[in-house]
Image (cartoon, rainbow, N blue to C red):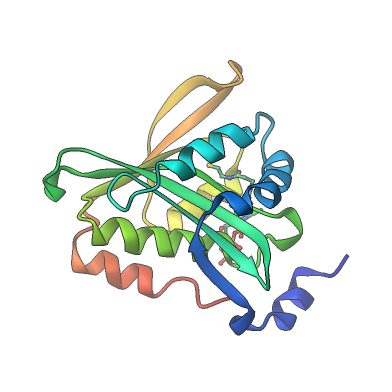
Length: 184
Ligand SMILES: CC(C)(COP(=O)(O)OP(=O)(O)OC[C@H]1O[C@@H](n2cnc3c(N)ncnc32)[C@H](O)[C@@H]1OP(=O)(O)O)[C@@H](O)C(=O)NCCC(=O)NCCS
């Protein structure tokens, strides 16, 4: 297996695209999902989410290197029709294990941040396994802070940390996001 640093040097930004998730991506997504979570989403869950994609309610993206899906993520946008009451909830984010630590998670979060800001969300939130310290570090870079614990949230045995990031309409937040993710 190549080292992450070797893969990073080999990456041509022109071969990487961020695009809306489509049904045709699901087979490749499932291979990543099954390697990423003890209780992976099913194909049916992804297809249902894709069928409901709408900029103001559900937004899912994939990163592709050449034609291969290497990462994906999505959010639900909730709240009233007035943008000022909207919040976003990250529902899933995963990177192919051999493509981790190359900036793809951050790339996806940056795109999602830009999207949820553009549709008027005031805040965004997520749950993360208490044991997933790497993911928590990634979210902290985007301004998420722990706001509580949901006991036994995963598989009735593993705690979730609830993280929130507020005031994302502030211009300072857009600046913070733009300064992240210099790679890939
Ligand atoms: C969490 C996950 C999406 C991160 O994706 P990634 O592409 O590897 O992350 P990035 O390379 O963009 O890293 C961004 C930042 O996250 C943090 N980070 C990510 N993985 C880390 C790890 N294993 N250890 C420590 N920090 C880590 C670092 O702060 C990193 O910034 P740095 O490179 O400047 O140090 C990926 O590990 C994954 O798919 N995990 C399995 C699924 C999962 O747990 N998803 C989160 C559900 S809440």
